[in-house]
Image (cartoon, rainbow, N blue to C red):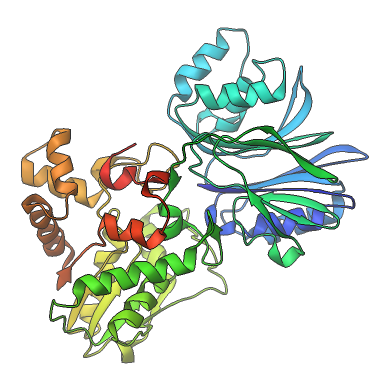
Length: 470
């Protein structure tokens, strides 16, 4: 995943770009970069942020960079933004998305005599591939549209030229781009909260496939938005920061709604929970919503240690990877011992950490651990923006259980039956997951309840990872 930010001001933009990009640190943990354009041309800084926060790595650069327009990125994947020299002139480029046909596209471009320089984990840098596609056309607008048409997956783009910042939301609007404004100019951001403390107010969100150009003097639409949208629902459930909104829907409020919906489903279950707790941080708001609706007290038997663990840091020592992944969660034994706990997490993907958390709760004296994931079982790996956090569908605990139950790979019709919360197969799958995970009880949030918690037309929401529907 990744987050992007851009600004165009009548004064130096580096301060806004630095903090606006930093506010996306929850969306990426590996690479980050900023590019500005000013009287001295382009100036770029890229750093590895795996072992230090964005601000630490880029603080020195803010004193050396100068410009009135800029773009920034925090990413889990390739280093970016890139500076590209082409027949369009020199420009800088940053992207968020996923390219499923990258190999075929790169082969096609190489046949034209082009070549690639940037590598990311041994593969062609996806942002450089986007640049190569843009460069196939005579102008930047046609190039952006050509790239988005050719890419199988999803791709949002910010492109900085000496005359303006081009912003293009992906064709189906799976990821957001929102515009802010103030007297000094404008900004564009993945997260809507990222510019509020910088003095901007909300201007508007880009529509699916919309392309604009932003200068210190204004914002001009260059390609109108399309009529169809499939924004990723996982943004509200997990990835989005609590103070953000997408399509006018608050992330925090949606999570309260999710918890309330789950509590409503549980009201006749004779649940023996003493407290409701959320796995921090993304499970917390769901748990508050559940507690408020059910009347069961909210409590925090786990606290996340943040002074030196502000991000999802993972160690280079692979033998300690699993240990360090959970070391930032610290238990409060007095709130665990002797209690029956209803525990809410945003989702269950592989299940490893939540199973270990449950085992620890029992060892710490918990009488029972009832688990309520805030979204349905994840059945399909994300094809669009890597939001399911799994490289293989067989890493997903739900798919592993289905495979065990059916004796191997299953056809789509059977998988769809497992996705139906009213089917016998679904309940059999849940019971097996409960046994393997060691939960006292298990009930996933239903897809219809989760979509109702968002509160917009369900045809505008992408639910592929839960039901396989595009």
